[in-house]
Length: 102
Image (cartoon, rainbow, N blue to C red; front, side, top):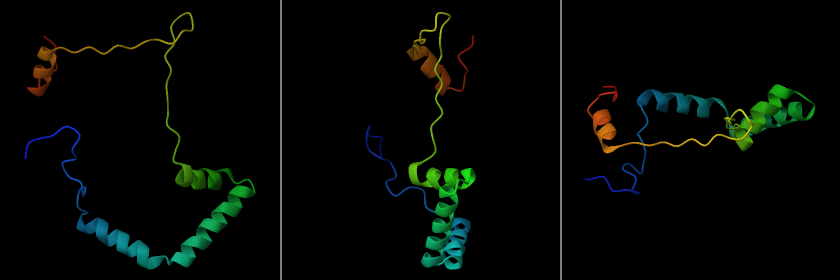
């Protein structure tokens, strides 16, 4: 099947490996939904009382972890503009395993 831009090659994703399936089943069989709710409520209560680690863990799952960003500044404090250029020669060199250094 040829590659088509914008079309996912494997819409179902990679199948789970047997070891992953065993771990997942073990976790689900060890923790009942009502117990999981109690764990999350205790974590929430700790976060409310000021436990920073509990707050980080809870918010990390609820909101996602923050994304690190870097802003590059020039000597005068202005943001630097980064321009990436490539040529067809560089692209073909990379696909052939060369680093492009000649």
